[in-house]
Length: 232
Figure 1: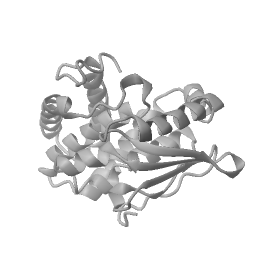
Figure 2: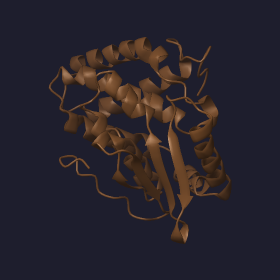
Figure 3: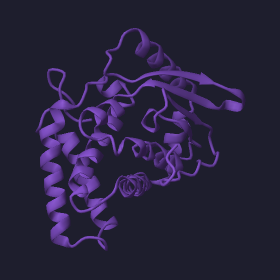
Figure 4: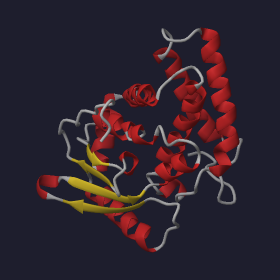
C-alpha cells in the first residue's frame, strides 16, 4: 500500500488508503443508486472520507506490506466508518453486512479473470503456505498484542486451515463503537473467497462470540452460504 506508514502510524494524507476509499465509494454509488438520492450519497461519501482520514492514525500497525492482513484491516476500518455514517440514514447491521458483501464482490470481480486465477494459484502455492505458516509462528512469538495471532495447518486433500486466536479487526470494532457490525465484517473474507475460488468456509469467528476464528480453504470448493439473519 503506497506510503503505508510513517513512524509506525498511518497518516491522514495517506495516498494509498485514500485511493482505496475513493474506489469503494465509486462502486458503492452504483450499488446504492436506487436506495439514496445523489445528494444523500454525496454527503455520505464525503462524511465517510473525512472521518476515515481522521481515524487513520488510530489503525494498529500489523506489519505493513509483508503482512497479508494489513490491507484487510484498513478496509475493515473504512467499512466501520461508512456504517456509522449510514446508520444515521437508518441502515441496520444486517443491511451493512450485505453491503460489505456486495461491494466486495464488485471490487474483486473487476480484476481480469486471468489475474483472479493467478491470485488463487498463488494463495495455494507452497511458497505462500510456507510464508503464512512462518507468519503464524511469528505472530505467537514476536508480535504485539494488536496483531493477528493465528495457526496454519494443512489437512487432507490440500485443505488449508487458518485459526485466528486474536483479531485486531474485531478488537478495533469493539473499542471504537463497532460492536453491532462485528458479527458481519467477515463477509469481506467470504466475498473475496467466492470470487477468487478459494473455497473459504467459516465455521467460527470472534465476531460471532467464539473464542477464535476458524477459516478453511480448498481450491474450487463451493463457498459456504452466509445467512445474514442468523449470524454464526
